[in-house]
Image (cartoon, rainbow, N blue to C red):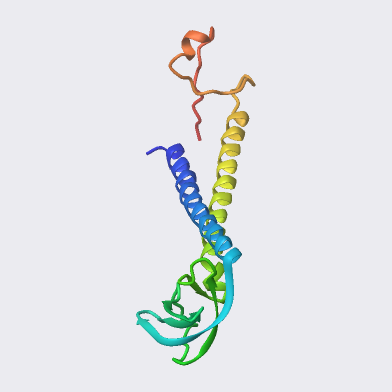
Length: 177
C-alpha cells in the first residue's frame, strides 16, 4: 500500500469513527434534553443493588418510587463503581411526568454523562482528523512546490498524458552521493 493510501486511511478511519461517536453522543444528549423537559424530581428507595465483579466491581441499584399511588421499581440506566448504595437508602431521582415508568437517578453521570463523553470523544477524533488531514495536505503541497529541477523550473512527476501535453521531455534527476 502506498504512503498516500496509508495517510488517507489514517485520516478517514478516525474521522468516520469520530463522526459515529459524535452523532451518537448528540443523539443521547437530545434524548436527555427531552427527558429533562418532562422530568419531575422525587425521591426513591434503593431496594436492591446488583453488582458485577471483573477488573473492577460495579453496582446497579434498583429503585422503588411512588407516583400518584402507583409503585414503580426500576433499575438505574448505568452501573458504576460509585453506586455502592445500601438497600433502604433514599436517593434523588427524576421520572417522566408523561411516563412515570421512565426514571433516572439525579446524578450527573446518569443524566448527562454518556452523551457528553461520546460527543466529546467524537469531536476530538473529528478535529484531530481534520487537523491531521490539513497538515498532510499542506505537506504534500509544500513538497511539490519546493522540488526544483536543475534549470530552476518546478519538478513534476509525469503522468500518462504529460508526454502528449508537453513539448519538452522530462528528464529525471539522478542524485549521487
